[in-house]
Image (cartoon, rainbow, N blue to C red; front, side, top):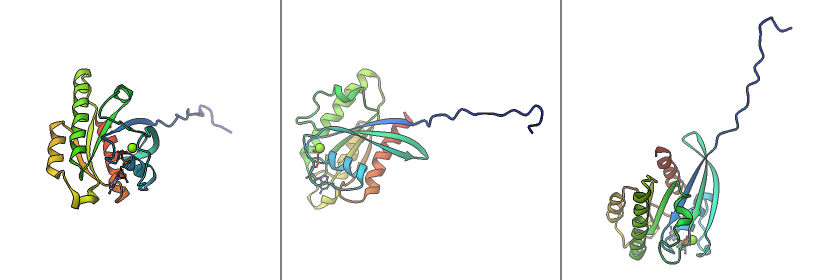
Length: 186
Ligand code: GDP
Ligand code: MG
């Protein structure tokens, strides 16, 4: 028997709140955008990936004890920042990739940073941008110094990382998770 005055509460079960974070990976062809994206999603290094394939992938992640649906747009521009509309309004954050063994890719990523800076200024947006120097396993063929990378990132107000899609998974994961953390801070 229920005692008088006792009430029974049926708490509505709230749908689990799952935030979304849309990350766009930019950079010239061959810098390793797909390899980094695939590594983050599968923990594997895939050495050959269709260079023209552009797609959006999703992964449910737990970052700092908070669930988040991370969507990654792995872009495949042929010729620098063109038709940027497809991702400018979609993105919560950008990762601009170059390859430390290729100065051309470093020059190419400056064009992306400039395009993003213009967009941010025009729309008064503060979407985080991370600069990634990929292929640190190719140290002996390095053409872009760490300090050149760091000062470019500082010039555009972004975080800077050096990584490798073919070395350990955790350091690649950390970059993607830090991108989400930057987005959360905004
Ligand atoms: P994307 O055009 O920017 O998507 O570049 P891909 O991911 O297709 O990579 C271009 C080439 O660089 C491929 O041959 C990859 O195997 C290679 N690559 C990508 N990341 C790394 C890396 O971290 N280290 C090395 N040594 N090669 C890499
Ligand atoms: Mg690719």
